[in-house]
Image (cartoon, rainbow, N blue to C red; front, side, top):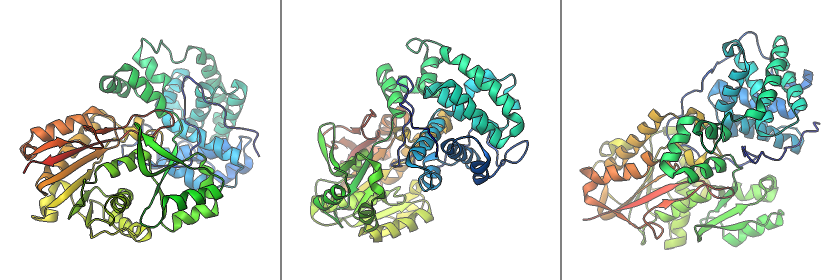
Length: 504
């Protein structure tokens, strides 16, 4: 058993703490692969993870983190998914699992900054093979963002390098000692005056830091970057179809966790509970709640959006576009039962057949009524639906996912300005396609989990100016012009939603 403990975060960098939940996330196509991706290690074969555990002097937590980081690079995977499979289910001590999670998420969130620092410390960055760079990143993250003892970070970093490339241990030692010497100058400028230094301090790409400042303003952008590196809180939604709020709260209390009701901007989110300690999810009584479809993990802002897009009165028909694996579908029908006394006549649509199949399976587990689960291209709804119209249409649009960076830290380094523009164009195409399938006096709602102006406000403006949008006007949603939750430590993710009303 390792003596490592998850240390207190650096107040300057604020990198992620361990978090066992993986709520929310980017929608749409998977981002592009990061620089230096390789399907197999270069310059020799890396040892299997179990062999590393047996032969290396590196701590179990660091070896587990290395395993996750390596697979994130090789497979273009998300760290949270790998942590759930390789760390949470491991036989490591709880403190080792927590430290491995901290390291893996920290490296995923700061990989571009770590590579920049490594390249400064190397005589020739191209000489370092991918598997060695994986190991060095972990040590550099500890040095720069965790304030670990330089001696311990260097010593363990060298052992990580040795575990994958024994001949590179000397190089690793020299490079890490240079990084220790460079630490005092990091982030290589005054963050209050130099945007590049500010971006390094919070481990953001420079272009994205500039975009956030332009969209949110300097102070809000800094707050957003800082909060994006904080641990993600855990929220669950009570499925009113299968359980009551009191039943769920009582079960969590019996398991030793006093769950708390949630408010956003002073308004209660119905059926939403915050779970202070994620470890309670391992309790058999709580696991039973999930197995019976009584609760599901969902960010509070996502729950707020689902609640807010429900019409004031029961619609005769409801179309959900971008239904995915059905999380919003469950939230919508649970909210409908709460608001109207019964579930809606809901049609769900996604462009991936495997997601449609998963939605049907989850709908059965959660007791959700889905009138039809369709697979098709939502930018060509005439081909999918013919002339059918609905009292309410809800588009859960593919987006960059910037509002979910605490849960999917890789996004910031995989996203590009070009891709953000493509997603904005897709959102507009979805709105224009859906406009013709809204009944007279019906409503059309649009939601994302990003803070990017180009994907939110700009899409709304372009839709209203389009021929298809000319027959619509903005309508209040949740008592205001739009839902736009802000990211701050301990709060929900950042989501956006608007509602359009058809004029006639």
